[in-house]
Image: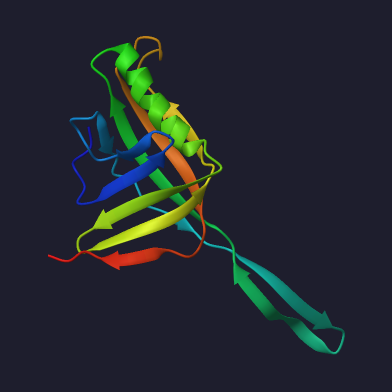
Length: 149
């Protein structure tokens, strides 16, 4: 298992919020979480035969792609499957929220259906530990709230 990160990520699922850094509940964040971010822009460019190059006249941010990776552990293969299903149901929603608490701030992301992979060290039918890597598209706007002591 990866070392515990000083971060708390919660996923909104149809049955409620799931903390992805809660070892007692069977979820532990992987060190690759939030390691990369991808931002692109939708642009309108102009060019003509009298001026070299192109010029951007309008631009707006596209969705940001975030990476979340975490382990899911169950005491039995059935318990692992049940815990995996909870987060799959969360990532499979057309829209949902993710909250990230780091230090003295909480970010809330407005997300859309995510792509994800699951890795196990043995066949899934017998596994009690899985690594889920999700690619989460979110709106570029983030709600940022300070955490008061």
